[in-house]
Amino acid sequence: MPLPDLAQRPLITGRRLRELRKAAGKTQVELAHELGVQQAHISQLEAGRGELSVALLVRLAQVFGVTTDYLVGLSDRQAALPAAATPAPAASGRRPARAPAGARS
Image 1 (cartoon, rainbow, N blue to C red):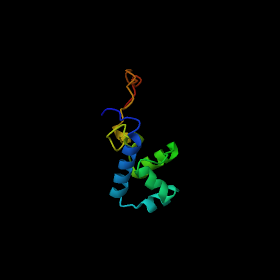
Image 2 (image 1 turned 90 degrees about the horizontal axis):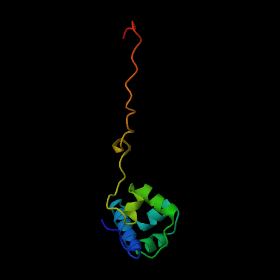
Image 3 (image 1 turned 45 degrees about the vertical axis):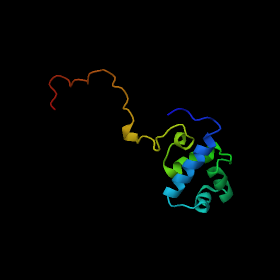
Image 4 (image 1 turned 30 degrees about the vertical axis):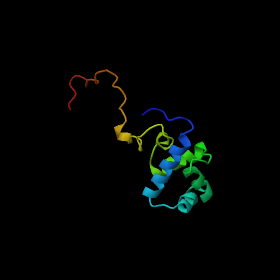
């Protein structure tokens, strides 16, 4: 996905916020209460006019289970990879230690 124009990001964020809120069955008032902001602020964000702080962006991502990149239009992937899907650390390449001679297993 190409990076959106900076002027388009608030509109993308607003559209995605509205879609997520409606999919969660929440009103603007309910979401505002959950986030500790005024309903008018949610309305402004959804219209692409409000200022979105980093703290509120992170909180919105947590509430809806999406990435901040998704909310601001940098990615079309909604959810972060689960911890089990993250790559495992590379093996050290060392062989396991051998049991001493005469030891029983």
